Image (tube, rainbow, N blue to C red; front, side):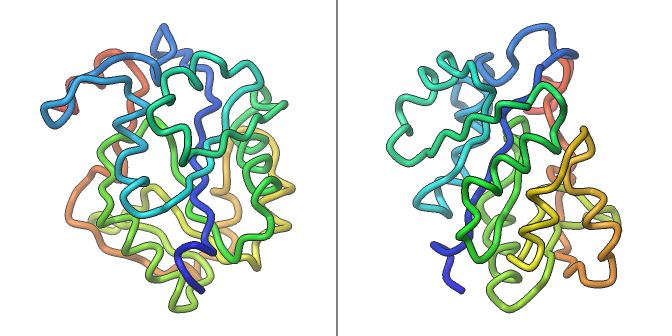
Length: 198
């Protein structure tokens, strides 16, 4: 399995209800750069993958506009049932990339994930792991990688729990990748969370 055969699927179809505005379009400062949150989040993925797949709501024109600078390397997948929950968005992303030999699934509101973490997870998948996930002090975070043996399970996801049920059902098959940073837990849900990027 080569990196090109693993689909990078990033979920960007949430409602940002706790943030009070579209958080992915909000300009934030991180690592000395001020730009929309989504561009911070995509940057490490673009260091590892030639092409990434961004799952968005049906009405995604503003997001497309913000991502104009990287549009040539981003495949936009419209999830027509994204308002019903993360499971539907994830299923849409897998359905659109179902020829892949594996998937690395991440969230578009987690800008502190580094390319090193992504590469470690991809490496485990290449070496035959069924599922690989990052752990910090024994607690699992994001993103999570799946081999294609879970294609049908992922496509059938619904509701708002994402792939957690699949990971829990196959816990003994999860290859843990120990990470030395809590960044695998840090997502931007509220305005106050922006301070975590400093």
